[in-house]
Image 1: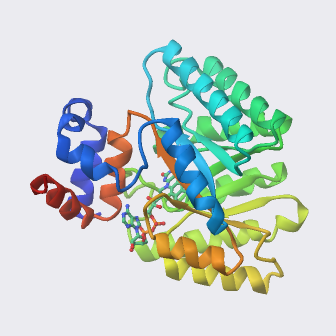
Image 2: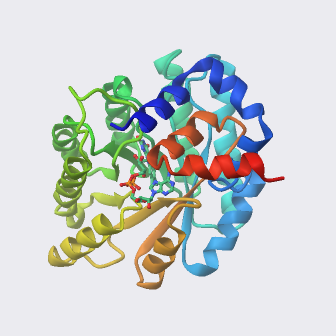
Length: 308
Ligand SMILES: Cc1cc2nc3c(=O)[nH]c(=O)nc-3n(C[C@H](O)[C@H](O)[C@H](O)COP(=O)(O)OP(=O)(O)OC[C@H]3O[C@@H](n4cnc5c(N)ncnc54)[C@H](O)[C@@H]3O)c2cc1C
């Protein structure tokens, strides 16, 4: 892992910096590249702008590691409100949650109750909920909670990270649940004892995991390819076609503001594409992870520092 990426990921986890740095105006200006605004209304507006281009969306209300159960409950209410507004505007917009935002660090039962409140509302309005995957210390609990909730709700999906050695086995354990999985490379700082470090190894594992689940799509599993990596996208498109999957039998999810041309290219080709739009005031650690994915982004922040 490069020094710059390591340093940025350390910053993203440092509590003091998480509080201090977002106060700087140049950092606030730079974050606008990755999110349309802090309010739900900003996310709704961005989703409405993407819809005519055949790009659907996923909303995430930013937050993680909450330290107060009331805050976790409030986050669940925020998602329930968002689901109502999505339905009223006729948007095809899923929601994606972090379990530590719903209280996993505090009380697992309360976290599951919050999750079930959102997923049942999503089911009522015919929508889908995705569970993000956070640092490795949360993987076991996240898998257990997903399996429990999946037994009752068909409209719940889970993110798996290709950089973890364990993910192949985790996927095997999920297959009996006909899971909906969004595969991503992985965004956190993990040691080499548990995670691939070389890009080529992560990419190879991503390809292997995704094609494994593609072979279960005809029997009810769902595959989401969550990457901006054009080479990986193209090789997975070719493999999906070889496996007899139509372009609508799996989805691509990309992040707002990243590789927008690739988003448009996929939509124009007739693929199912969603853009994940983040909103909320607790954006700092999430934003620094975006910088770490491409340390060249730091120059963009520096330019904002010197622009008016
Ligand atoms: C929909 C979605 C959901 C996600 N959910 C999770 C999750 O729950 N848990 C988790 O650990 N991770 C999550 N991630 C993040 C993921 O793990 C990667 O860190 C991130 O997607 C960057 O990797 P990449 O696959 O785009 O490939 P990379 O090889 O990192 O990037 C490929 C190309 O995409 C472009 N690119 C990628 N990132 C950026 C960036 N930040 N800024 C500018 N250009 C960029 C660059 O051109 C780069 O060359 C999610 C990603 C997506 C798209």
